[in-house]
Image: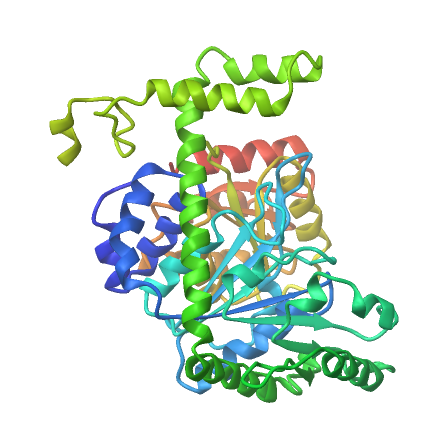
Length: 336
Length: 134
């Protein structure tokens, strides 16, 4: 990957931006260097997560929201995630097909990502893709998770506003009491509102929300009824999203959310740097394969094996070690 | 380390009415380990815009109702204008006059697949098209 890509992204070059996203997804070392340059320009976009079961209407709702936010003068980014096959590692990324109502213009950028083995409803490259869109100057970024069941709740770590899309006929109030996805919504959407049971579902959700202790100054989740295929109820949903945004701004919760996200990003970065180091410097000669073999035979346990790796790691780390060049060069080399 | 994965966009020109072929090809490319982005029916502008945003290696066009040469030329013109001709490969499959195959190749489709094309031929053709652009 050529250098200077970050500058092109900041100047609004879509070819450079999409190539950078590709590099980040493929974990290209230079792409990460470019992201370092972009990082100070991020943190401005508002991030909205949309989750819910497969077929609930997440993509269609986002398709409507793109047009609505564009009409309100906002620049829109979309990150749409679909699952990777655990067997063939291929993927069908079919969210975009429902997002074609908007007029083509330079202020809409949609990117489809495959989970590539990540659980939790997102993919590893989600946050870095968001960063690139943020640096491109998008005002609002809509993130669509994979079709989620009950526990794919990672979106709450990434989004400022979390939307959970439900449809009528998905179970009784016991389902609603369960932990996980029903707890993360800032806004519930009952889509396919023309189907019998939509009003009842809305009422049940309202009861569920009202049963929870509500402290003054805390956001109370709202419930929106939509029919995404005919763009009904979506204006109200867009307004509700912006209302939540305003609430976060005045209540100070936004700062809190961003701080929590910064912490997670740091921990993710440490983990992936460490794993890369281990793969490159300790895994030589199938060391990890050997450990896995031992584990399978129950000749050791994962905890002792991990501690052995960490011990080896700390002995390898010399004062001159540089994680950027991944070499143990002389200290002077570090400033390069 | 993540391996370099082939990303392919599958689309049809606006008046195409049958999508069974596109869906079948999408499935077999997924099973070959590729990431397949579905767009469905779209005008050239939208197809190229999507190819840019998704940074695909290959754009695959499914065609049945004729006019693929004229529309193919228009697609190539937009690709040229928006600057992805050298980074993206184009292939086309479906029903078209066999005599059009060399003409399609001349305007920039590096692979053409008639109805008789086998699963293996399609996968190999897409892989070769993608490899030529890296």
